[in-house]
Amino acid sequence: MRLTVMLVLAIAAGAVGIHAQKPVKPNPPKGFTALFNGKDLTGWRGRQPNYDPAAEAKLTKEELATKQAAWNTERDAHWSVDTAKGEIVSDGKNPHLATAKDYGDFELHGDWLMVSANGDSGIYLRGIPQVQIWDPSNPREVRNGAEKGSGALWNNKADNPGKFPLVKADNPIGEWNNLKIRMIGDKVWIWLNDKVTVDGQKLDNYFTPRGAEPTPVPERGPIELQTHNSETRFRNIYIREIPAGKK
Image 1 (cartoon, one colour):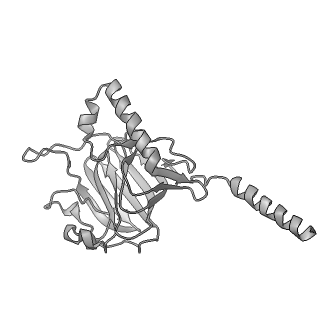
Image 2: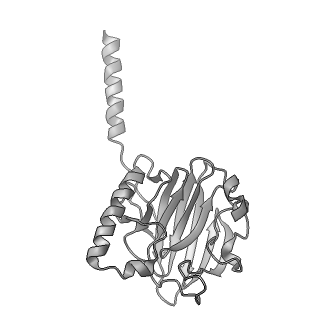
Image 3: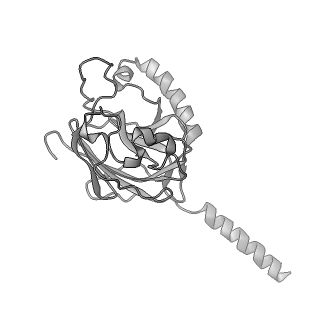
């Protein structure tokens, strides 16, 4: 009887410990600000996939509020937070997850993990696609250059050297990867797992109409997380805003 009581008490104490576990607190490097607080999606909004920032800017406040309410409902259906680990979790379905704040020039640090094979993800810069994240062995994406690896500006035009990474630096699926991104004007530098994958290349504006003269990327816009097909996790997301004219 005594043993049974002790066992029940131990189980109860363990349950209390689990529920009392505190969220993982962010620990940004000096000069950086955490975009993710480790406990909820404060500061993040849902956003329609591939929605031209220029089109969004033309919406009235009422139109944007209506759209944003719908996007946030979808966000809450497909994005969540693992507070025990301090991770943002996507089930691999839309919408995108975007910062509520817009950014100009910046340096961004973040970790990502693709839980299962054949996933496809990315990070939009000022709402423009994208720093590519994908499974290099995904057979469906071989024709698109997946075997070259993640960490480049895949939506750039074919003649832009930033379209594919300078080196393949991905860790195996199921392991964490680290990205560092610097954006000054329309130029982008990217490090994947401390290896340079893009070295100061221009980000093309994906939303330029076909056949039209190239349009510049927005001067400001959101940081946006995109996922397809695989549960994908993000953590340690930090940003440093860079004043105009400085690096």
